[in-house]
Image (cartoon, rainbow, N blue to C red; front, side, top):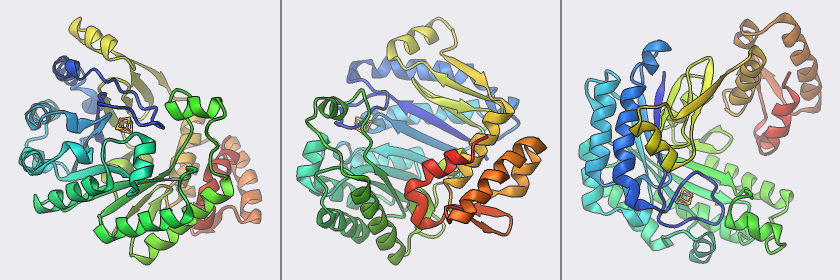
Length: 379
Ligand code: SF4
């Protein structure tokens, strides 16, 4: 399995918590598309070199729904013709992220006709006060309307996002958010704890002492509430932040966690070919200029065997399926494996990890603190 990610680095306004690379200069969209088509051309042998076939396409951002369906169609055609994808229907998954206030019936029908099979809608909350605080462009009514319109247009695989763990969010509000989400019954739900990133409005407020985050205990309670309510409603938690109805786990994201190759296109996008990680420059101007001159716009580093070991541990343990010990052993030296098992024994004794056949897993009630548990297993 392998995937292609396209980063669309434009937002017409910035959310207070977000540190993804994005600019407001939507006047540069045409130049960006032109450069993106050059970059696709430049990297058309990526999958040949790593002996993989791309099966998923994900257009994320930023705000991909600031592009017109015609622009998305041009990108799709170029991707298919450059990577030996005979028809867009050959892709196992084709997702576009959309903001609720950008889409209407016509837009969504056009996306369907381009071949987009799955939508990821950035809802974040169904509470209007919280949405205003986040500086989102939509309100709760617009989010629901966009969702129902997408259903009417024939989208049968929709993912919605919700954020928890911020100080405005009481437990009562959180339960209401989850109930509203469940009443829509999307196939897939992603939910992330709000982080405080340095280069954001929230980060600046935090530094000035104007924002106090929710305590870890309260955030943990919200995460547990989410896990319980979603499990009761038939969603399976297949990764720390991701839940799906049976058969609707995100295929594209799963290839990141499976350690499969992926190609990232567009400013700030990352790629992995099995040995090397590379990342594109995080500047729309540098990106456009580099591609205009026929230069590469990325740099990379070859992973050491230790990097690969640690990544394999981290990516596998994020997933409910866990870490396959046999396969890990095949990919490392005896010495590294010994140091790993020594630490693993401690975690098993403490109940922070469990062994099921050949698999090591983090128990579901410990997933909230999984970052620390995983770090303890690094060599
Ligand atoms: S969360 Fe999405 S819409 Fe908001 S600033 Fe970040 S990329 Fe843009």
